[in-house]
Image 1 (cartoon, rainbow, N blue to C red):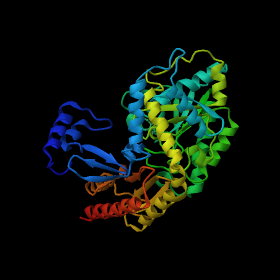
Image 2: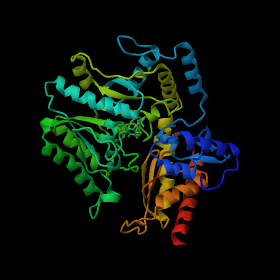
Image 3: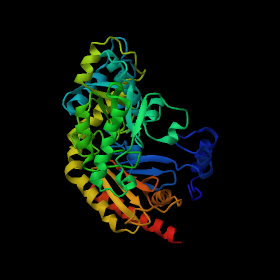
Image 4: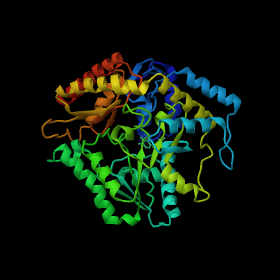
Length: 455
Ligand SMILES: *Cc1c(COP(=O)(O)O)cnc(C)c1O
C-alpha cells in the first residue's frame, strides 16, 4: 500500500506477510517493501480491505466470483456436505452423490456430445490431466507418436509444469524448464501485433500459423491444439472475427484434437455457458475451473467428448488422478453455484442485458486521449493505453498500466494491468448501476494516469 495504514491490525498482518508468506506471481521483496493490501470481506461485487475501503471488484477476484461474494447458499451447501461426508475419494470403484450429480449437471450445460467430466483441484491440474489424457488417447488408438501439443504464445494454461509449458509465457518457461513436445504459434492479438494488416487479414494470418505448424512438425505427430476462446491473463485478447472460423476450417482438415481452455470463458462469462458456444467451436476437451465454483472453493476439471471417452473406455486403466478429484464439498458448492446461475438466469442476463451494456459503456472511454482500443465480450473487457491512438505507439518504459492500476485501487476499483492493457472481468451479477460506477471510476483513473504522464 502506498499510504501508511491507520488500522494497527493491518500492520500486524503485513508483518506476518513479511515474516512468513510467499505470495504467488510476486516479487517477494517488493511485497515486503510495499506491504500487501489485506482484503477482509466481500459482498456482491464489492470487497473491503482492512483499512475499511470499499472496492468495486472489476476482476471478480481472479476471474472467479461469477455469482458475486457473500452468497450464503454456497456456504450452506459446503457446511451441509461437510457434516454429511467431508471427504471420500473417487478412486478404486467408489464415488459419492455430489460428484455424480455435478458431472450430470455439467454435462447438461456443456456443448452437444460432451457428457463426461474428469475432476481436478484446479485449472492447472485440468490441463496437466489433458496433456496426459490426449497422449494416452492417441497411444490407445495405435498412434503413440502423436505427442505434440500446439499452443499459443501468450496463452495462459496454468502454473504447474505442464500448465506453464502449455502456456506461452516465456518468463514462466525460463523458471524451472518445460515439458517436451509442446510448440507455440503466434496469438491473434491484432492491436499489439497486427502491424499494417487489417484486423480481418491478421485474424486469417494468425489462424494460418496453426496449419503451418501442423505441416512443419507433421500431422502424424500432433496430438492436440489448445487455446482459450478469448485469452484472459494474456490481456483479454478477443480475436478478429475471421480467426475462429479459419481455425475451425483447419481443424476439420487434420486429425488432431482440439482443447478449449474454458477456465475463464466457461460458466457464462461471454454470455453463453462456454466460450466455445459463443464462437461455435466443437472442442474434444474443455478445461474448467474458476467460475465452476465461483471461486468459493477450489475445483477444476476436464469435460471430455464422447469421441474421446469411447476410446479411453476401451483402453484399460488411466493411471492418473488426484486425492481431491471430485472432492464432495467442492462438488456440493459447484452444484449450488450452477443451480444459482441457471435459476437466476445469470448467463441470459449477461448475454441480453448487462453484457451489451458493459461493452457499450466501456467503449465510451475511446474518446479519452490515453485509450487506443476498447474490446470485450460479455463480462470481459480490455482497454489499451497508448501515447498515439493512430500508430498505437505506447508510452515506452513508463509502466503506464501499473500506474493506472494503482490509481484504481486508491479510488475504489480493481482493474488489472497486463503491460499497458487494463483488463476487467467483474462478477457476472454486476448491475447496470454498478457498471456505471465502474466506468466512472475507470475514467477518473485514466485522467489521473494521464496527469502523471504530463507532469
Ligand atoms: C487461471 C487459469 C488456469 C489455471 O487455473 P488454476 O486454477 O490457477 O490452476 C488455466 N487456464 C486459464 C485460461 C486460466 O485463466
